[in-house]
Length: 336
Image 1: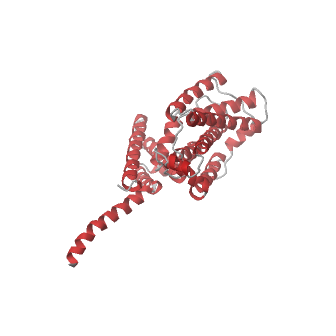
Image 2: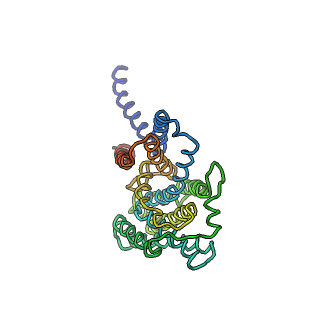
Image 3: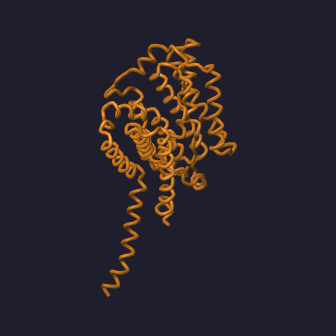
């Protein structure tokens, strides 16, 4: 009798263990942190200079720029949409701000607000077209990517905008700690605030509901359209801020600001466990995913791997992350 009970209990124990294991993996940042720790150890064993102060500072500086956008992209993905135009928005906002401060001779504060306004306006436009007109986010934001790239050339004439006011150079040259400046400080504060909002507030819960099941969310009284449009505006404004931090760091409104960021940001947040299908993921996971991508790219450079392989590595990691996301949804979220 006891033997039969033990046999029947064994499959249940196995299923329970499997669900607990998948549940652990489903917390994106846990798995990514473990993978990142292994990668750091691997690169350090091959080349101890990987953990040098200079290299760590370089990684964190780059992460602070794209990480600001990753915060907004995470919120938008949670709401069930995504934005491919974030790099162009960052670049366009930066050169518009630079032009306002130089050619138009407006105060620095007005130039900065103008740049943020450009990003927010593009986000609003993306949101309205996607939500109200029903054009897929892929098509709308891809089109906006090209529009933004063209407008950058129109605004600048193909040349960097400089010299910028001394206040901008001061912002870019400030060393708060460990060689990190205002961009990193803003990134950390924004990440903490956004993570708290998504995890702990009604606004965050409604955002998850909007991305998880829009029809059900609408039935319970959630204005899903407003949440999606608000998420588009947020990612647009954060893209603008990131672009202007790069502008301050370079000391000019360069035409290459934001180039290629869109795919890096999406790859990073997906690696961090943010679902492409909406309704799942955290800001912490997205930030950790971006950090992991930069660790891989920097590690490959330090050990002398050809730059072309960096792109291959990022692509492979992203495909694996999406595959893991599908597994999580099938076996944990869907309960299959």
